[in-house]
Length: 86
Image (cartoon, rainbow, N blue to C red; front, side, top):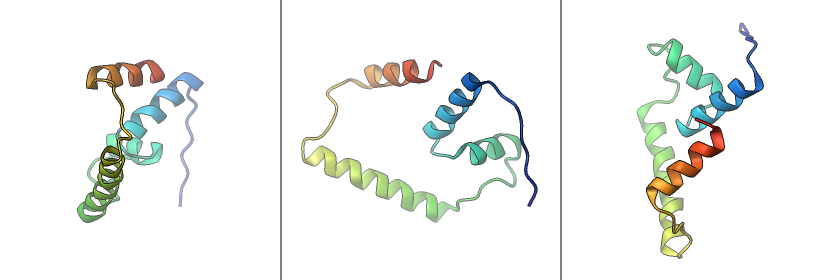
């Protein structure tokens, strides 16, 4: 298997990592998806759906037990943007 290395600044790496994470992807999968979309879809639909269900089940359990944020959607979004300097 071939390996590709590129030089990017620490800031570029941090932003790329954050954007990939917000997309639910690794940096590798995010870059492949953006550069080679026709061949990069590693996870099939069922796997993606299963991951979404697992994530949502955890979140629903947290909400049912009262473990949730009191922030509005806009406040959460603004806080996340500040964290990644977008």
